[in-house]
Image (cartoon, rainbow, N blue to C red; front, top):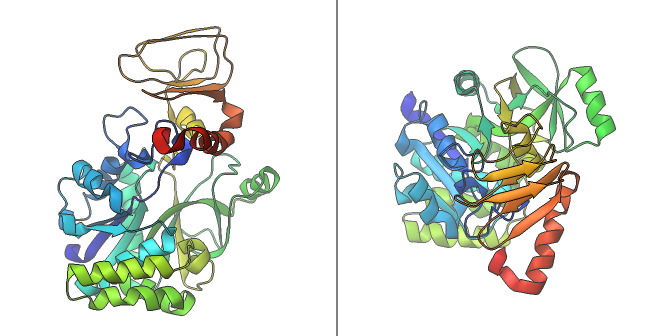
Amino acid sequence: MANNKYCVIMAGGIGTRFWPMSRLSRPKQFLDILGTGKSFIRHTYERFAKIVPAENFLVVTNDKYKAQVLEHLPELDASQILCEPVGRNTAPCIAYAAYRLMRQNPDAEMIVTPSDHLILNEEDFRAIIAECMEFASTHDALMTVGIKPTRPETGYGYIQVSNNDPISKVKCFTEKPNLELAQVFIQTGEFFWNSGIFIWKVRSIIEAFEKYLPEHHALFSGVMRAPDAETERRIVETAFSECRAISIDYGIMEKADNVYVRCGEFGWSDVGTWGSVYQQSRKDRYANAIPPEGCYVYDTRSSIVSLPKEKIAVISGLKEYIVVDTEDVLMICPRAEEQNIKKFIDEVKFHNGDKHI
């Protein structure tokens, strides 16, 4: 039944890899980094709104982002925004949503999705989600979605399948391999990228918390019995202050014996770095990803440039660079060194505090 289908959007990240555009006050999920006219979280909501009614969405985010979520998703009621007092990775985030749903509808079927992914072929994607929901509704299964890899990517987790069926039992998970191992994964044809999208019955995931993360079950299960919002808030504050920070992959998916994956191809990217934005962006004849107006480049190749609206930039002599200009911060660095952005942030914070972070 349609009213048993729910979508949980995880929107608590701070998007440090997209600094200086992404800030603590307005992180990646609320930005239009790809220039589509819509934020990542808006795209995510619209992607699932065709299969889940508006009243069956939950968004888990940090306390300080609640107003921004409602700004971007005006279809939702404030009661549908679950506020984390502090980030503790994906397992506590999912636990909060699962125990809330168990209270609302014990027959709920959950889709869990990040708020900041790119999916180009949404019709194919929704067809795969429908298959997963059908499978999860008739099996005690923890489902995830795998992506057929197009390159030996070292920034993604991988899922090894046990057979070539459309829905396969998962053999193992591997986190972010080195390049040599990633190349081996591609050659075998048995490994798929881990999308971080999950589908399951709420009863199935709660049973998994009881079995594999009993401390989280003990802390969050009170949400099921909370008689009012104020009691729920107190339970959640205690749970997040005491629980261990752990991902759902490490905490449950890698341990459970009822994990299945549906693999597919639908133009997916987690758009996690400036490098991935470069890969997804339209480029000029010199392989530069630059704004359609206001950017004048000379003797510049394979670079990405992001500018504020109505800002003019003249760039000459750059090869494979990232240039990001905002009202108060300008960052210029080689594309090959974007892993240093965290170091840049720490240095700026040390000298200038949080003003520019």
